[in-house]
Image 1 (spheres, rainbow, N blue to C red):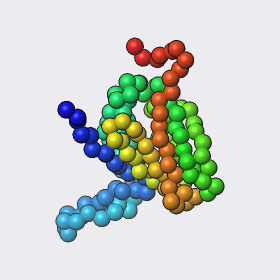
Image 2 (cartoon, rainbow, N blue to C red):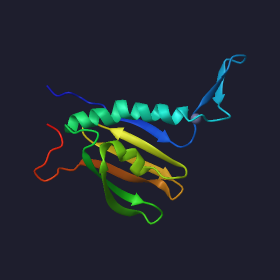
Image 3 (cartoon, rainbow, N blue to C red):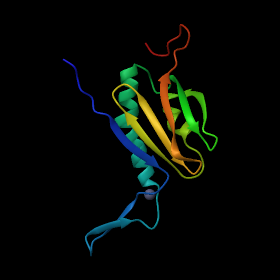
Length: 139
Ligand SMILES: [Zn+2]
C-alpha cells in the first residue's frame, strides 16, 4: 500500500503578520507594531512541521551537514550551492532586508523559493543531505 503524502507549504517572511484584535468591532487588523512574535511562531512551525519530518525521512540530525543548491539567485540569477548544517538552513537563506520564503515539503524533498527585491520571480533552493566519506555523525 502506498502512503499518499500531501505536499505541505508555508510562508516565512520578514513582513510582519501580527494582528491586533479589536474587541469593539470584533475584527482583526494588522498590528501597528511588530514584537517579532509572528516570525518566531512561523519559525517554530517550520521546525515542527517541515524540518523535523524531513530530518526523520532522511535519517539525519539537526547538526548533520546538508548542501543547499540554489538557482536564479540575486539579480544576476546565479546558480550555486552552500554547505551548512540542517539547523542553519533558514539562516543561510535569509539576509538583512525584506524577503519571503515559500517552503515546501513533499514527504521526501525540502525545497524553498525565495522572493526579494532582487529576486522578484523567485530563487529556487533544494536541500540535500551531504554524506561525509565513511563517517556518520549519527548511529
Ligand atoms: Zn509581527
